[in-house]
Each structure stands twice: as C-alpha cells, then as structure tokens.
Image (cartoon, rainbow, N blue to C red; front, side, top):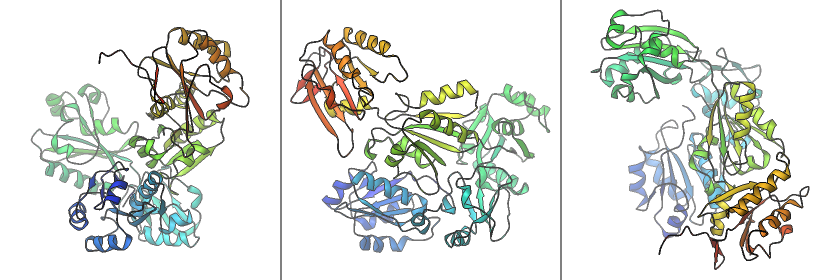
Length: 552
C-alpha cells in the first residue's frame, strides 16, 4: 500500500455530452459502450473517469471490485459537468484526480474519505512512503482524536509530525521486516541494491537472488529504491525487469571504493574487484552496507542503506488555470511532501494538494524567505515543490534558489520544472505577436536601477524587437510604464500595435488591443502583461501577429 502515482488514466464517454467534457481533459478517451470498456481497462489502468451518473457507474464497476489495494480509482462525472464524484480509490490518487478534473471543468468535487473531510493526513498515502501493517486501525483511532506514537530510528522526514504524540497506537518508520503486530509501518526509500550478474543471467535468477538477499537481511522490498551496477550491465534485461531505477558506474569508479569482499577473479573479468558492494556504496552516497556480498550462481547482491536526501522542484504552474499547467508541473506538486509558495499561488494548485502534504504559504514580497525555506526543507530530506506562477526560471524563484545554493554551498538536488510564462500565454491570447525576434523586460526597479532598465528599453526599441513588459505598473511605481512607452515612441510610429492581457487564463481575464498612440498606462496594473509590437507586427481583426517573412 502506498502513494503510487496515478499515471494511466482513461476517460470513458458514450454520449455526445460526455464526450465533449472528456475532450477537455488530457486523458485518452474510449467512446464505446461503457461496460466492455470498463471490463477491458480495469486491470490495465490506475484510474477511470466515467462520464455517467453515479448509480449507473456503480452498477458497471461492481462486478470488477476486488480490493482497495488493487482496484483502480474510479471517478464519475455527470454529463452536465457539474459534479466529479470519487467512487473508488480516493487515497490512491482518486481524490487528487477529482480535484484536478473539477478545476478544469469548473465542477464541484465530491470527496467522502474521512481523513480528507477532517483535514487529516491519510496513513495509507503518506507522501514518500509505502504503508504496510495495521494502518486501518491506527488511522481509525486518529479520527477519534488519538495522536499515535512515532518511532523513527532512521530519522527519515515524515510530513505533519505534529499529528503524532504519546498515544498507545504505534507508527514506525522502518525498512526492517517483520515488525510488531498492530503497528502501522511507513517504508522509506532507504535501500540500494548493488547487483552484479553474468551476461546470461535471467530475470527470474536475478529476482530470486534479490528476494533471498532481502529475506536474509530481514529487509522490506518496499524500501528498495534503486539498483546499482557496473556500466556494462546498465541495459541488461534482467535488471530492467525489476521495475526499479538502474544506476550504473564505470569500472574505474567502482575499483576506487573500499569494500569488505573484493575479488581478484572479478577484477580480472570486469576491471574492478567489486561490483555489487562498490555499486551499492556509491549509489547510497555515503551510506553503509547492511548486507555484504551474497553470491549466487549467476548473480551477486549487496545492499546498502542511504540517508534521506531531499529533492527540490522549482515548479512553474503557468498563468493559473489548471488546463494551462503542464503535466510535469502537476506531477511535481502532487508528489511533493512539502509545497512552498506565495499563498495566492498555493490557492491555484489546491486541486493538486492533499492533507497529507505540508503546505508552507507566505505573503507576497517574501521571495527570499520562500527560497530559503524550500532549500532548508530539502536539506532535511523532504521532497519539496516550490511553486511559482508562469515559468520558474523567468522572473521567478529558480534563479534565487541557485543563488542561495551558490552562496551557502548547500547540497540539494534541484529540478527546474518549466511552465507557460506570461509572455507566451499572453501572446497566445493576442494571436502570434512573438512570431519574430522579441525580448522580455521587467519594469520593476526594486532590484534593477531604473536608468539601466530605461537603457535596455531604448536598445530593444532601436533594435525593432517586439517587447513584453513584466511587472509593468503598481501603486508604488506609477510612472515607469509611461516613460517606457515614451522611449519606444521615439523609435516607432503611434500606430504600432500594443496588446494588454490582465489575469491571463483566469475567470476575469481581460484582453485589450490598442496602439502605441492610444495606449493608456493607467489601465494597467501588476496583474497585466503588456506586449508592444515591432515595425512588422500587424493587427488582423483584433489579432496581433509578427510575420517572419515567409513567401506565401
């Protein structure tokens, strides 16, 4: 049992009304009779989105229901697109998926799982762990107000530690097996298996060797996070069949690792006295062997335990609407243990978050605090999503994170997840004004002196670039936008097209097409993106476009 990602999703819609709703979602669609489609898809998908009434959907899925652990999540969407009901698998991605669908369709999500309704984290889907043991009874006592004891000998970070106390129920963070009866076990991804094998080793032989080794060490398979091996075995089919990430090292790197069980025969054969032990130690990044080399006819296995290593994803969520987000951005937020961001941006991704995640909102203007907080959480071992609007690397927090890491020397794994920046989403609303060379300039002089900004505008205007203005005007900076337009007007005619887009992709979005001569700076605020055309930009029935010069 665990918080596995929902990745294989199928929509089933038979009627034209259901099909039109399904086409607004980014999932494959089966537009045939629902009963055979459900029967065929049931063992193959993580979730089904069925565009039928709840009663009809219940009758259709009833013959296929087996267990909470094995059944896919099932979401019923009424054909008016007003409600999104989680029928099965709420804690296996169904609740999050329903919120996401409801956000796209403008519908109401109907979620009935007790922990979610009470705002409590569900023990069977604690982010970053696989859950085993008697989690149902422990969760039931939590719903009655008990704060169970938490034993965490591995010091692996657990979200919402404030929910634990001195109650009689027990939650144990462990990779060891077995464990006490009646306890809820949280299995962290703490183990690395080093594997060496002959070229003709089969998947069955590798699987058997790994299983026996874990059993000998009294370790849980659920805590096995990756396989490590020598480079020449990186693409071995038997290792790939294990279903885990495979990390491979050159023989020279392996040979430099001190190990307890070196072999001259192995050194003569592959250029390093150890594969399994050395690979396990390298992949554990400073960890220690918990099982030395185990020798089987065609396989060697060693297991190391690694310390928690955090991960920081700086995530661009686009302009705000769910349909404007990338799938990668949505996944980064869904799979995070902690989500950090401006409170307004966290509101925009509330369809992706659950009570099992820690949310760290902060006010506008606290950009440095957000970056520092996100890095600190990642250093503690958390999987963190730092949420930014637009693109994470365009006037957002990715650069601030790297600057902080550069200044402090903090060792954190960072991933930048791109989003649709305001220039692109705004341009799409206008037509295609960025079809030729263009620049983006922020008019905020809080961090950049105004004379430098003005010089950049002057050069961009002289170079005949299309210009996108970010942060164009605020209550405390009322004059800069007018000055910027004046600079541009010295190089371009009054007829130059100008477009403004306020609250891109949100309910009160407003798009205005005007000209440089008629532009009113007072119509613009910090929620507006301004795009000024070049000498090539044209206005075609309210759509702006900048041709590149193709012959038609």
